Image (cartoon, rainbow, N blue to C red; front, side, top):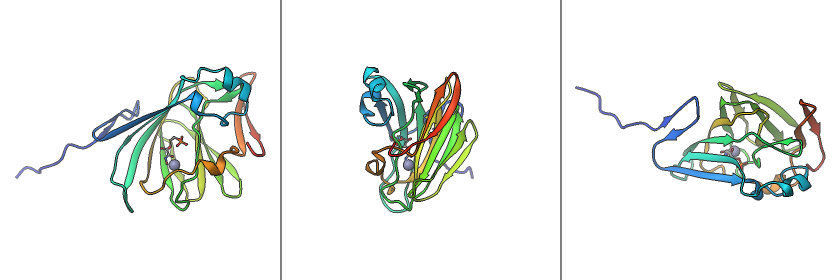
Length: 187
Ligand code: PAN
Ligand code: ZN
């Protein structure tokens, strides 16, 4: 007897494009990222409608034990001398972790614990990033192409953006074509 099967959902590994239902898509534009970039003047000069990143994810049942799967597509670009990045967050359920997989482009995953200690992991096609619980996370695109990363996380994790409203303790900028990492206080 032939095995019966359900058609699976699908990810195109090269581009991160997801196929399958139900799919949710959300684009975050420059105008929504108030307070995220250090150079407020440069941020105000930018086009508020400019797409910075899009998250595509398979919707999942909410509830303990369920998982979301989604891809973040982070465009290349800068605000002043700082690279485009996601807003970044702790999970509302602090103890819950997440796994990111680099698909294309190049950049960093910035991790920060509750004591404010930061660390950077290089993101590129094939990189695997195990984000422990109690750790805030932000993607930064330091390349010239779209940075795409697949993520899997508990549907109960939620997002706590407010705890880092003052900013992460590290910023990645460019100066004379050189990448710079700068430790900062209160963003
Ligand atoms: C990701 C992020 C996604 C967008 O799916 O939500 O990269 O970043 P912000 O939520 O910080 O805007 C994730 O980490 N989910 O938990
Ligand atoms: Zn997360």
